[in-house]
Length: 241
Image 1 (tube, rainbow, N blue to C red):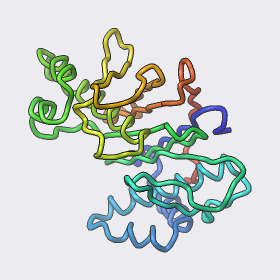
Image 2: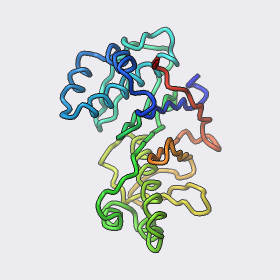
Image 3: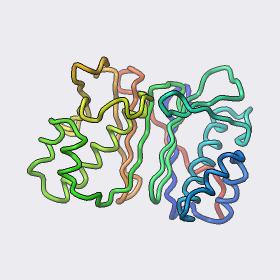
Image 4: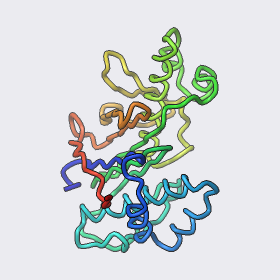
């Protein structure tokens, strides 16, 4: 159950993209979600959105079997984070949904301060320039001197971990990326803050995964539980032939 940890669902599009699975997901979406999916110009983005939001609905119902996947409705908070709006359930349930080219992922938990981000690792202009603009000074310094392949992967480590933290906090772009820093020294993930951010770094636990050789995934867990909430990997829940 999600009450005991974080349920993590990951789907690589190459493995799940069938018409049967797509239609199964589409049937679960609300009319508004189907409309939003149809607004994407490219079909691959329409499919990605449909798979991600179908996955979310099935994942929530796996934790709350009394609620059918199509019966969930959502509301967006004041800073853009989506929450379950209905139906009413005994214990609140939270989620973090992320998708990128080739991958969809969802984390389900009873703890609100959990965030997930997944990114496809691909060139995005000049990594040093992006880092100088968006990262904390300690992160920029750590990137200097790395070999190109190490620089590429470490950049996406930082990016996904920082995005996961922002999503867990639920305050979006109001939290500047350069006011907190991720440390990966000795392969131990830690976070630190400038004086402008009132948060306790000791309550945060981070996990990074590689769903494929081209994807990086990060989870930020602000539960404050020593060692973090246990993460339970769940298989792709929508039938595929």
